[in-house]
Length: 423
Image (cartoon, rainbow, N blue to C red; front, side, top):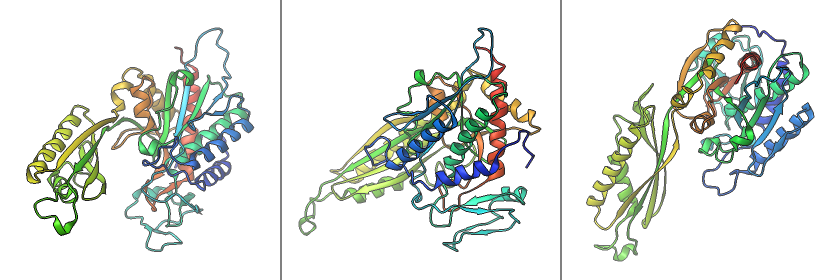
């Protein structure tokens, strides 16, 4: 890793991260509460209080758990208007692995090789499967204990933004315009931006801090829809079921079997290939529900994937007379690349910030989405930046303190570059 340009407090950044990951903020798509889990409110309250303690007078947490604050401008422009910059991360963690009782393990001066996690020796972060570790020897690696995820997705981003707020407040000689910080809830279940008031946020450009490794700028994401398949059968006591029962579970199994497996599935696609991914099934004989995510970089193809689901539904109805298979499609988010064309400086200045630090920026794309996808679609251009995440949504998740400090260095440089821009 390259040394940082600015004199940063890496130990304070680490302490923030360790503190945040120990709060269980797992989101729950089956909850009707907003945010979906109380831990998100708990962490949000802590962040609000810490922002106030830093000296940001307008720090607040709204009724939906969204936390915002302003780092005041240090530049005087004689009436010229500087764009308002925003940095965003989400406080929730994925429901795909437990986020309860996270015990972060700090591996200082990483010597190379595999990392066996202490509370489950079957959970091993293998160097052969994590080639990024090779360039991080001598660095500080943070993992969980093997029984939970770590939560660096996206508490690494949260910690970096919080440390940015503290550092810029302490170094008021650094020239920059107004900077808004915003922490959202329920991003992992697709609701991160639902309750954000962009007019109140008042930003002209934003960046999500929710990326892997270091020095990547992600300016493309999947476009995404959610298909909910409801299979309705006819239930009756099995002792008298002959000719009368229509088993929704069997029909649902038939439906899933008709979806592509050798192609258009996550197991068989990579890079810019899209897919249909059945990820949840529940119910009984009378009714069974299946949830499928539809993904592609070309938004128009989502309608093709939806048609595949509808054709499978029609075939299942023919195979199981008396059952109905309803397909409901809900829009989730869209490829940010389209919206970013409206503000070319968003990516260009991020690239320049890296070059100013002697780094080589890499443009990338996400086989998924971020809050930035929705922000961009709603008119706030929002690329995604690296924050040191690795193996997200898994007990094998890890991050590197040096990559987090590298992200902080980029934000400081980026803040100054935007301070030189005018609306």
